[in-house]
Amino acid sequence: MTWVMPQAAHQSTLEFRPLPSRGKAMGEKRIAIMQPYFFPYIGYFHLLHAADALVLYDNLQYTKKGWINRNRMLVNGSDVLFSIPLRKASDYSTIEQREVSEAFDRRKLLNRVRAAYQKAPHFAEAMGLFATAIEYSEPNLFRFIKHSLVLLCEHLQIRTPIIDSSSVRIDHSARGQDKVLAICRVLDATTYVNAIGGVELYDQAEFGAAGLDLRFIQSENWSYQQFDHPFVAWLSILDVLMFNPTERVRQWVENGYTLVANPAPVS
Image (cartoon, rainbow, N blue to C red):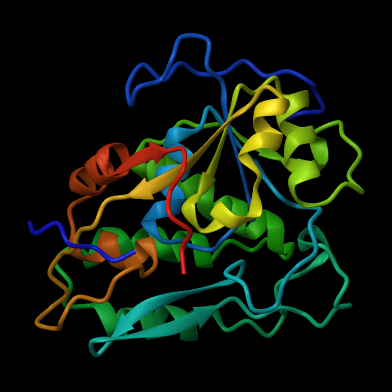
């Protein structure tokens, strides 16, 4: 293997699971906050693994060009988008207000993935997992995606609790950094862990003043064989699972990142 990869209920406190490894200090409580993404890239699972709890935004405004209901897979050596089609709704709808389209042709998407990956070495297991997620009949977008994330966490043996953001007792009219700080305060966090793409969104001094340590996920550079094509990085976890045994992927999730305080901004 060559390492060269590009880039609960309404309650105010949580019982956090212990994280004895990865330099975790005694008494440290790490919170991560993210939008729900459908079969996201492996860095999302690094974030989940690093945190004591993940707050999953359900009452945040849905963004059309984000990664909430779409991702990338490999087709003939190139990255290609796949997506979950949605019913039409107001541009101001929150994620929890969006619904999967009644016209969503699940069989068509499964056949598309099957055609792209049927010769991959771990196709059967990965395809079974993907099919279970796709065939879930829940029309609500947030619950549909959360179901797939729970499936993947179980498969990868990630036991981090996932909390719906609307269940956290804060002023939900708050925005951006103020909302993050409010969530961390209510959940008694000592550390806020974020994806490295958010480096420019947050002020270290503001977090320090609030008594919070701010850390970012720095995923290691790595690659794996994708048929006979040049490696295409940062595809959906589906691609990783198609080409690698589950135990190896679990090891990458557990050991394939570091927590950094002041990374260089991501361009």
